[in-house]
Image 1 (cartoon, rainbow, N blue to C red):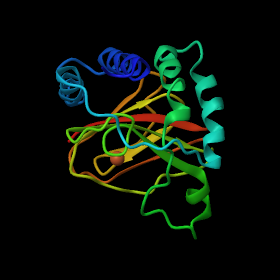
Image 2: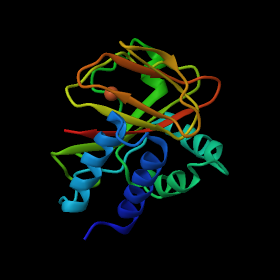
Image 3: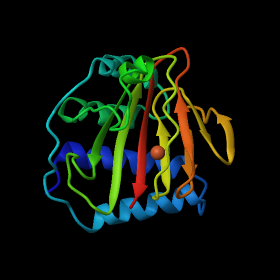
Image 4: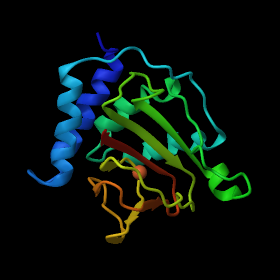
Amino acid sequence: MRHPDVQRFLEAAEAALTASAAPGSAAALAGERVFSRLRDGVGAEGGAVAAQLPVCGWIEAALKAAEGGPRQGLADAFAALVERLEWKRRASADPADRVFWDGHANAMICGPGGLEQRDDLWIGATVMAPGVTYVDHDHPPEEVYLSLAPGEWWNAGMDWTDPGATGVIYNPPGIRHAMRSGAGPFLALWVLPV
Ligand SMILES: [Fe+2]
């Protein structure tokens, strides 16, 4: 049995993605791959050891920004998981880059080291303080981002884009990409079929 809070979060994430991605689009298809795998089976309890970083103090304000918006249900379901997650800096983060070092954290929800162990998908979250740009990166799996608070995304085939409150951003496999916060905190979910 999946933990009911995780199940509720996954249902809310799928509903948000389905509501926001055009039917048949690459983002919709990637989401279908991930959520059908989650329906087909529940992974073992993951190895996440609850941990926070100072930047996690921005999560509350970011979730407040979602209040009354189209993703409030998803924000509420995510809020129930926040304190059980293992919030970490990106492994390659450089302590000399203070703005990025102090200004971001990632947490895996379903995937390696998450609340639910999976080797066929990653679902997680990124929080950033205001005025932070996430380092350019790439990875073989395609990726769908769902915003919970305002932010902008870039990839090698797309100028900086604010997808709005119901935004979905799709990154094709292997593409260079990044995201950044504006005047407020950034909070987004990422969904990747692996
Ligand atoms: Fe990414």
